[in-house]
Image (cartoon, rainbow, N blue to C red; front, side):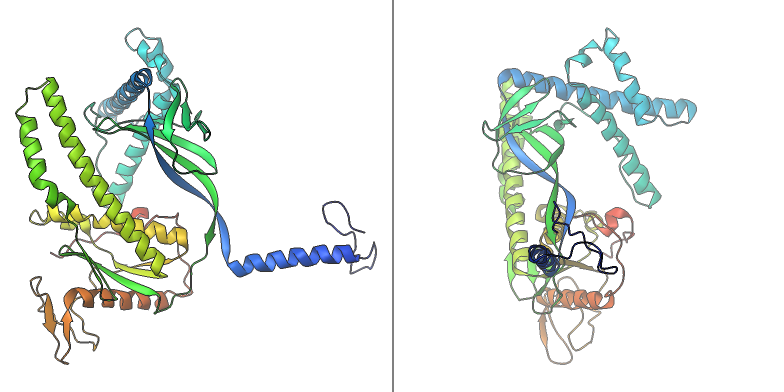
Length: 446
């Protein structure tokens, strides 16, 4: 007999109970089919954090409230940093985050800092938690032999932001985000999301634009990694003359957004420096300069997203070289060009988009002879940076960029075959082995 909920009370081993009816057989058959269909798709569900950024349009009273939040959050951060440094210098001890949070009510009752009670209390606590995270990142980097930056005091001239860990709601019908003590703020909700809101960070750009970054915990259907095949694998060699060279022979031109705007930026910087400090004309010149820098940033991000989307969409496995970009930036002759091309941001985009799409992302060693090794196996150790083409002893003539992309693809496929069956460490989407500390960065070979 079929019980409520679709269960059948029947024990096959003893033969006791009610035998399954035709209705029960049909239910079990449907359930079995659903399970087989799920396993055939090779998908799994993962609690993933995703951020959605929206433009805000606060009213003038709301802008005043946001300015109060920015100032109080900045003051509490600097106060906490000063307190921790003072205690360490005097007693050699470290103050915990909770010890600082406990002192916030005392500060609100004091006449000198009573204005802290005018803002949302959770934003102040989040500021101290961010300070604690900065300390942990510094000591973690130091323990791995890296040179992480020690927490610094915040300035009102830097980027302004505050974080709301709870109490924020979204109205899709009214296109508003409602914050505690601020109210409903008009927003451009161009993308919808489903999930639990973890935190919302409001930031203000130098061009006086407001944005809200909504961190959402979503349970999404993440496809499993696709099979690794040579025909659907691509190798990418990044460069300065060409932004990227693909193993297919295609070269993506370097747009050089900063270089094209450098003349205009220099002029605007000169005009800004000639204005009297504290005057309205200096503020106008600052906004013009900030808008130009913002345009360069937007152009670069748009280009990187389009290229990374296309590469991930058209290929199943992407192989790249693990470059020490921080070490390359120490070369002051090429630092500006390397910063303009944004290799690190591009590779990060490709990595997390591959993770979202179930594609394979492979990094090869930075000291692999990608541009020096011919397919015949011979190496040209005398190759210099100025040699863009070279001829092997076997008679083949190579374009060093295309050869590097093809070798990166070959080395990546070789690494995949070597690592088959090995258990990889658990990692979150978009997290690299270097960021976890599993792989130590090596010094650049310049």
